[in-house]
Image (cartoon, rainbow, N blue to C red; front, side, top):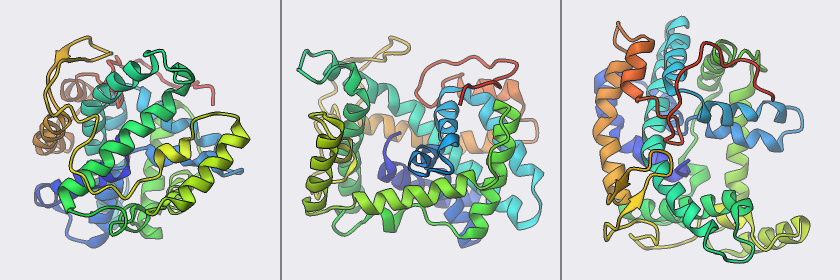
Length: 324
């Protein structure tokens, strides 16, 4: 990711500037922009839906593919719509670009921490526990971002109430964007309700995970550990704590050296350096994305071929044929 609150607050921090740039006068368009800041992450939650789970790999496919192809297809899909749906879709795509921007900037930092922990020789914390460690790092950063930017914790700023707002009409417009993009980029004609269903499931999971006092989190984590026979719980790693602190063990506030695991570049940037750096790029990225001359070459120049993970991905002629 980063996690849900970091993406939401990142989007809220640039909302007015983006609205002035591309025009988002309605509440629906602003909601669509903020929803776009969650990127394809809602698709991961299709796993809990017995009828729609077969489309959940689309989330990983989008994260992994060349962002130039993906952003170009998103923009062209939005432009294909008409009337208010087109405006909703454009706002969503602007937010989606913000998600890519923050993810590609911060993810190498998260993976640096993840790789360090899973290779430290702690029993049970090897590479097989990578997803739980990843979620734990992002949850800790999420809590820090929330308190730093709002002065509140999840006791007063509940993720399932504050994020993922969108009407049925808004979701229906975004559904069309995903249908086109999946077909054009990956060669899959997905269910027309794939994205809207994923948002409903994401909302449900956030409500289930909501446990400011920790009682429900402890109960669910115990059940997961017993059922999965694992000492570590993904629920425990993803459910936000009532933590009123503006620091994180993973924020690198003392600017120690760390290595990007994908490019092997050494950096001393902190989390906030990366966050602010991504924010400074929002307006140039969105402006270029909707420029009349935006094509694959321009998209490659814009994204530097860094996917959502921050890993270089060169565009291929066809991404279709993914084994979903």
